[in-house]
Structures are given as C-alpha cells and as structure tokens.
Image (cartoon, rainbow, N blue to C red; front, top):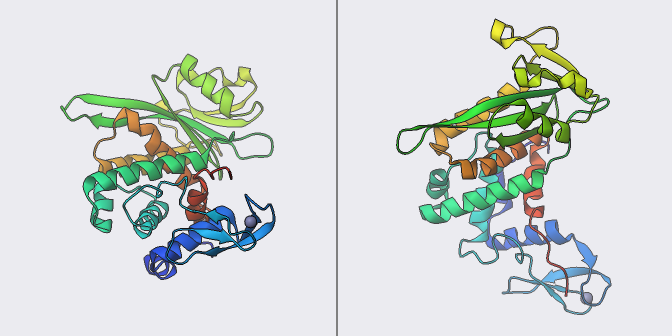
Length: 291
Ligand SMILES: [Zn+2]
C-alpha cells in the first residue's frame, strides 16, 4: 500500500490497546531479536495481562512502551496511535483543539500530546543535505511567519528554506535575511556545485562565487518563471505552513515554531511514501539499552 490508510482501515487495524502494543513491539523490536539476557535470536511472546513480552528461551521480559511517549502516560495507547495517525494523514497539521475534540481528552493533555508528536516528527526527519551532484535543483527562499501576537503587536519571524525539487526541504528560523545570516546555512546544507534557484534578493548575489550554479528569478520585476528557473516548490511549502497556522494554530510562538516546522518537513519529505510515516514515528523513540 502506498497510501495512508483511511480512518476506517486504521480503526480496523488497531481495534484495541493490545493490538497497538503488539504493533509497537514488532516495529521497535522486530519479530525476532537478539535477547538482551541469553543472547539468542529469540521470538518474544506476549505475557497475558501484562504490558510486556518474554523471551522464548529464558523468559527475559521486554516492555515495548519503555522509552516512548506512552510509557508514563495515563492516556491509552490507542488514543496515542490515533493522534499520531491524525498527524501523519494531515498535510496541514493538527491543532491541540482538534486532538481534544477527536480523542475526548482535556485540552492540556491534547496540547502535550501534540507537542511531543511534533517533536518526534522533527527528530525522524533529521537534516541530510539537499541538492548535490545528479540531484534536483535546490530552491532557496525566505518567508515571514506570524502576524499579530496576543497583544495585537506585529510579530513576524523570518524562516529560510532550502527545497530540493522532488526531494526534501530544510528550514531554519533566522534572526534576519542578511547574507551573513543565510549564507552559512546554505553552505552547511547544500553541497558546492549544486544548482540553486533564488529570487533576486541581494543576500543571494554571491552564491555563484561559492561554487553554486546559481539562477535567479527577478521577482522584483514581476518575473516568476524563466525556463526552469523558479521557486515554486519552496513557495508551495510556505503556503502549506501559512495556511495551517492561520486555520488551526492561530498563533505560534517563536519558541515552538521550529517544532512546527520540523513536523511539516517530516510530512513534506515523506509525501511520496506516506504509508511509512506512522511506523517511522514509532521508531523515533529511542530503544532502551538491554541490561
Ligand atoms: Zn533470552
């Protein structure tokens, strides 16, 4: 299946907390794994009535929830799974309010769950470089996110993004859009020799002297596409984020913006393999070291 399951398929797949625990166990530890105690390649059986599995040879127990966000949570595993599913299946993000409604938990619980899930999405996403030899051109652009804060003051945050066409996107919250600010991020994330596309903002003027094959679209002269020189892909990414913040999150504080951006990068970067999102998210929890 190369699509995200429907809500119904998801519910049928995970009808109970036990079904969720079983899935968590198999995704994190596999069907068999080297036993932390006896060292044999073992299958682990579910211990009836307990949240654990034990080694077929020595009885050593593994608790699949240890090290995950679910471990000490009083919210059921099934609700966590459903919350994660919502995040994976929505291109425009999920607000705390939305989770509260869908899961029937308090707003405080929903808000905490949303924050944790976004953090894990960002962790899974990582930041491998974009562009490079034989890869798609990298569109580089910056945008202003936010609007008026709670007191009604203008409060915009500058975000720069580097998007490989048909590939991944990397974003950074930056203090301003000057060359000395944006250039180090480009040098760090886009290998020399890459084709890069930008608008005519002055910060990008020196890119060819740093070894990039640089093409410019003259936005200030109302030019948006010349041949294959354009920045439509990164602008598409910006519009998803802006629409989401407008429609669901109302106001994102600078402190949480990076977490939000990480979760949007995750969804964007896996847009061609959405069926992998859910399990990748479960794998993001660090596996405890066997004692
Ligand atoms: Zn064992």
